[in-house]
Image 1 (cartoon, one colour):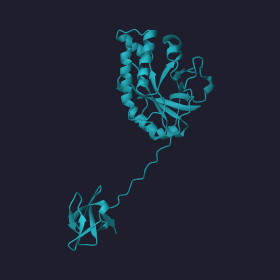
Image 2 (image 1 turned 90 degrees about the vertical axis):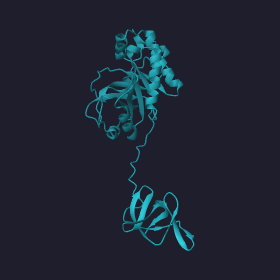
Image 3 (image 1 turned 180 degrees about the vertical axis):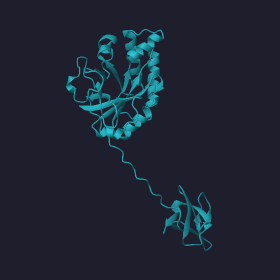
Image 4 (image 1 turned 120 degrees about the vertical axis):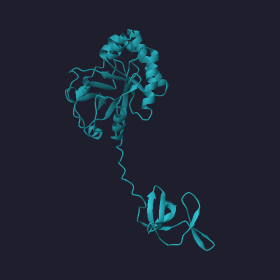
Length: 290
């Protein structure tokens, strides 16, 4: 069993490294809704990945039809394309989805709701994604033909103690409702985590999230050369008793001196000379510090 949180634009300024350090094992992040990217999605997912947390996403649906659901699936895949997910893309169709439909003259039926779910999930699967469904017991028993969807991984929303800040120890993971199949994730309410000032949606996971290694912060690379260094020109050739060095970008120059001053460094281009008098611009690999 593992512990996870799910977040959206409602949560800002998370310290993801503290979240992971306090024992959170995975994160589910809202990627968007309809055909709109969640305004915190990129910040959240980058933060979670950089902290070494396995991640999944969910997409909130306002689909009125199967075609709308397919369009949402395409937009979702485009949104998450830059990232490698460890957990599924979860389809999230809720009561607010139905309100939206009714306001636009479409009354959701059990058949339509089911077809919308299937259209999104089948589209994601067809295009190579891993997909699951976020839903609750009311939808499973009353609003969907669940037998047509139960083969998809289930993220179950069920709040026996209410949604608000029940804490991580108020319920035991084995208390999850398994009558309709064991979910891979149970969202049981809200709890607090280090790295954020308010309660967040809390989940027990029944899968084993992959181990992730926190990327090591690379130390800044010191430049090989800097202004004021003394260098000698290497990789030279002898032409008519004159030693010639390679100019940056092509051509040669006569190397009269055994040492030069570095006047300017710009990437791999180094300007050398005597004092402030410029002799040549040389590739950094054709110089040796002395």
